Length: 107
Image 1 (cartoon, rainbow, N blue to C red):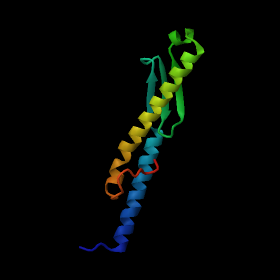
Image 2 (image 1 turned 180 degrees about the vertical axis):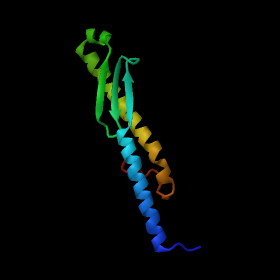
Image 3 (image 1 turned 90 degrees about the vertical axis):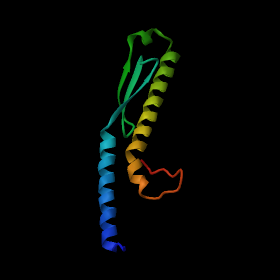
Image 4 (image 1 turned 120 degrees about the horizontal axis):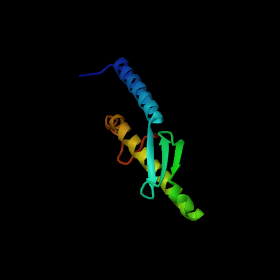
């Protein structure tokens, strides 16, 4: 069964529109990273913008280096969660493209 060029172009346009919609939804998604058993929390969007930082009062009595390490760990945790969420959300688009193993789309 042959597919016409017009049909292929229509499918490509629909796929592009769906990807743009998914990217927009991902950008507005907020994910939370934590460290120190939840004593430091960072809320980050799908575009890696930090929206909120929450630090438990008990951490404020610690050394500056401890707080810096906890904050860095919470940011790193949030970044990992954003990456995992993005990959999961975009996996459906990549499935039909027959991409080489290990190839990552730029999301």
